[in-house]
Image (cartoon, rainbow, N blue to C red; front, side):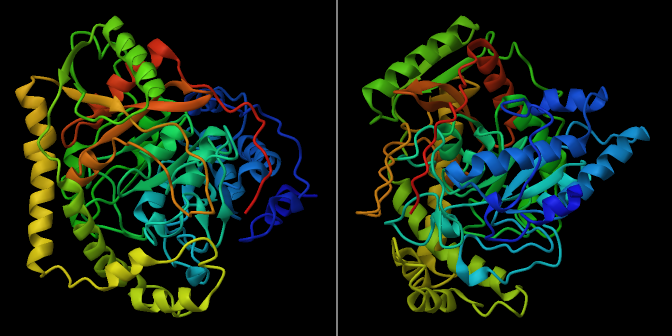
Length: 520
């Protein structure tokens, strides 16, 4: 059977990946860094086509255990062969050329449905790629397919289960199938840590890159809002949304960020992106911690004793690499969460209605009100939880509401200039560190509630500032991450600090391959 025929049989949305008879992997991709694959491609030791087929074969074998990959791209092998042709002709485009990447299924890829996990959008076939996809393919990347996500990026209900969608079912944590992969970029997290692609793209409004990265033993970067275009991505909030890389090393994340960062005329927030973007991979400094003052966010409390113990070991590693640690015991932005809810609910209604209005005619749900009605009529959508957040958003009064305007101004001020910036300046530190999140929590369909515990995501998310998580160890075999947080446009600094920490600790451990087969 020709490779194109073998691939095509798994390219249909919803078709079981086990329906194909792909060959066994010919190239060992399991836990292999993207940068190592790039070196093998450049040296002619392997072709992009062989790498792509190896990932496809691995998806067939491993994905049924976790259900991370929602759909495969029928044009992936064409992209791989084009990369091989370019390389043979001396036209290599960079470290991502020929590299298979998975993207979250709220990001437009022409010719494939963008569903956000909802049955209401299964006919949403965009005519054009999103700028994120265009930048990836412009760098030579092979878009391997789309990953499952928490439906509507986990914004449908306050009583939800991360990793579940009406289209894709429940994604499981590769380290323990009874536990959550976190969300909303759950499929991207599970897929990247299980080496189902060289790296993955997630999106975050508040924690949706950093939490699944930490709970799946990955490096995840939520960039400054405005560094990466949001055009062609199903929105929650123009104030907080961003796409970003999820990868198995800091270097891999830096290579992906280099490709996707940049200005987009259709996204006004990215006006300054070209002036700030750089080659983040080339800029990595393994000695970045030496002599650097770092603030420890002691005011973020509520983590478990076991996680705190792992964090103290990580702090010792930072000091051993020459960092000077300064405890920060207060912050002064305790009320930011109440403002954030007003912002997100209002943004969601207006921003989503604008996105839905541009969808193909085959999609009948053109407004948030239409979606609420669709869900009420479709029992498969509400089998595990309802849509209370949808209903709260529908009741908001738009961007001219004085309460909304005050919430935006206040929340961004107290988390940004009067929060992170003030903490950095008053303590004379370059960045802040804290645990990213507790280890993966148990999935609980009986209550339909994510019991996620403490998290570091909210302050940088509301401020729109960058947030990097790097594996720092494990609690009871479950990975946990350390967060590096800095001011706007400080991605290069955070990546270098994270890289130096990573290279000194090598704390990441891949899943052991024993994930179970339980399914909702």
